Length: 231
Image 1 (tube, rainbow, N blue to C red):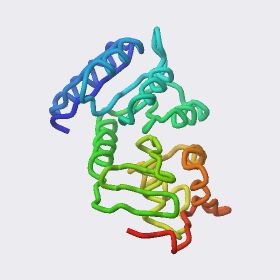
Image 2: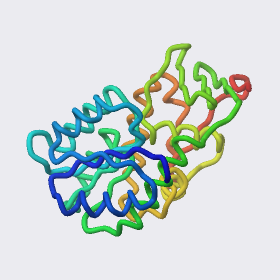
Image 3: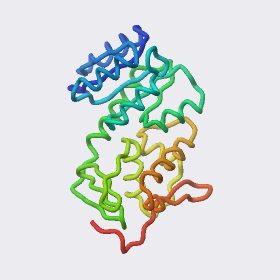
Image 4: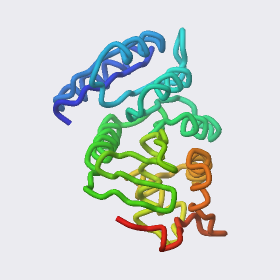
């Protein structure tokens, strides 16, 4: 992870120190903030931040608000830390564009592994292909998605989900398989996380959202007429 620039926003000084010391030992440049507003100020004022780690409960501005503001201007990977274990909080986080959701207490080693997975997937999914699927265009090299020629802003996870479905066009994929492949680790939460992302993805794709079919009792499948597919 050497060379990465990570912003940690948490009002617990011991948590910031723990993460700072552990990640810095791996060659990561760390920026810190003790409240949500300060964290947002740093994010908007410092260029080149590769990933943000956010606590949920913070003074001045909570993690939900910070994530919402970040998503207005950036698709940088976001990991949310929380002491809560309630399912509705997790689903809310994913709905706002959180890429990973980790409940305290947790192992710094596990967090580091998830950071590496997020960075690897966000920077390493390159291809020289541009794929045309009806009114949907995927520029894998530029990580761009267009519907009827107009760009669509997708979060990191939404893009990964869409490209995974496309790469497996015509295959009925279970929610469990999608979680394990797109989230890049064995996910032990509720599979309705996938339903939340699919719902938002369909909305953003407009008419092209119909290409994502629900397969009853299994999961989802991406299907378009073969005449609409070219590379």
